[in-house]
Amino acid sequence: MKIEQFKKRILIFGIIALFLIALPVTIYLVRERQTIEQQAEDVKKVYLDPNTVSVEPDSKAEFSILINPQGTNVKNIKLVIDYDESKLAATVSDFQKDSSFLFDTKTLDVSGGKVFMEFGTDNAGSIFNAQKTIGKLAFRATGTAGTSATVVIESIEVKDADGIVVSGFTAGNGQVTIGQISCPGVGQAECSWDSVTGATKYHVKITEEGNTTPIFDRNDVTTTKITFESKAGKNYTCEVFAENVCGVGDKDSDTVNCSIPSSTPTLSPSPTKSPTPTPTSSPTPTPTVTTTPTPTTVITSTPTPTLPPDVTPTNTPTPTPVEFVATSTPIPTLPPTGGNAATIGAIVAGALIIIGGLLLLIL
Image (cartoon, rainbow, N blue to C red; front, side, top):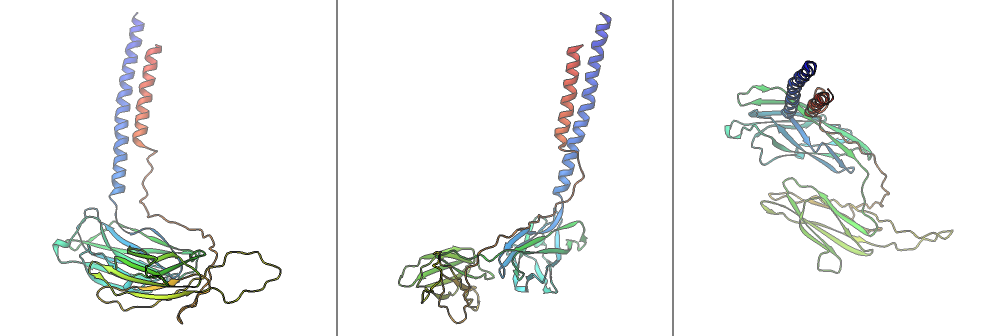
């Protein structure tokens, strides 16, 4: 009888000991996990968004430049952004400061494959300590299809409200992937134009010869290209108006004739009929932009068009699949934790309790 009581006491003390060990271990692991997550969130950074942009050759890749100071009162920002001159091109006019970013522009220069920019303020009301969009930076893709180029934030200097340089800022870089030129399909044409600084949207009208009603008429277009159905032998006129909060700019337009071939070739042996390829045309008139910006237009159309003198048609190529390489915004590397800390702690505690309970039942 005494032996049985002794065994029960040992088991009770054993279970208590298991609880005393498991509980602090679980609490410790949970706290460690929370600390690591908090450290990851508290990283001060300047980064490009999105981190990867895919464009066609001679098109523009646009990045937003953002700063997340994590509570630091920012008074001055100086950045140097590096890019591959053999594949990308940029000018001062390719940067547009965000309307909500109230800092003065102290430096803005592009040379030697680098963009130099500095912004600051003497107005205490403009100082900020939360995430802000500095502006947008665009690059024209000059490289060949199937290549890519990295845009690197090479240098970051941030000063606080007291003019002291703040350390610890990390950079989030970007990548431009240059793909094959995308052409409209058979029986289609496209109207495209250069983006205009300051424009928030475009009003696009496309009219077919002989019809007074446009086949396309929208004033909420935010892209710089519209694809539409076309017919051989018809003239199409594309009109584009740039718009912003100030109003609507003057239109820019161009007309192209979508003509069919004048003769039928004789082939031997007898050919198998296939769809007629669709050429594209790219007239690029350059309007003068005043208070309200005006875009330039580019018209593309169907087979063998008769085009204005400054237009060179190109046949629809067969797109070649391109392997795109994406990179992600760097994330601080954290120390290994051995898995989900809370889960491990719970498993350890549960296992110890179950073992103790089994021993109590067996003995």
